[in-house]
Image 1 (tube, rainbow, N blue to C red):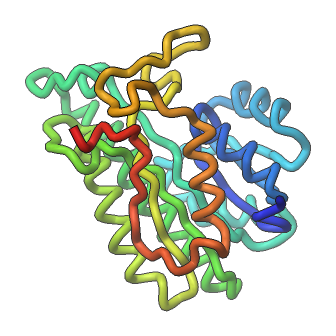
Image 2 (image 1 turned 60 degrees about the vertical axis):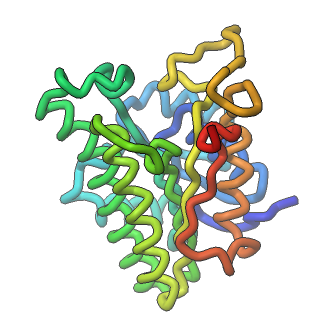
Image 3 (image 1 turned 120 degrees about the horizontal axis):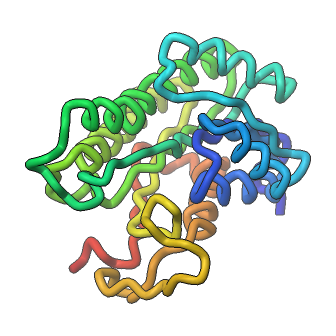
Length: 246
């Protein structure tokens, strides 16, 4: 279909959902750079996706070098960046278990710096890049349905931040020809969720009784990263199997 023909995209986090989005973007005609901290895993992901996909070792917590990294990516892709997908995210065991009483300041900083602060400065620096290069751009933030629920641990609180950020930046950047939207997945069959190949996809907390799949998030990310979604501004689309309805 080539929904994203000749577009240039950066996708933070090259595993799980990020991998599925990168593969979908390449199938739709985009050239993609995936980012992460582990070069071996990034190289392996690119080898599975194909020649349209490159990688950069890039920690979103490296705030000072964010602008330089974007320019480096632009050189690798032979032109300005059209799409940013903020997918990088982490959680700790205390987050996973909702263990409020034992969560430490170090865990707080690790999660907030990656999930919220990292996303904020990726958006800020990408907006500057797009404005400077007169790009009609798209930013897609992968948030979480946890950002719409009561939160007592850092992961959920960080996702509340990303939901609010997506709405605020959607309003702020629309006049600059930059469309900002988000996707809020529920539980997805990824390593972060503790799911591994061969495990059951049954999920009682979802109304449809199953985990979501990374490919389902990728389909939404392709639509929101394309001109098809230009009249959708600052929205966070739930893809949670109906878990938020229960």
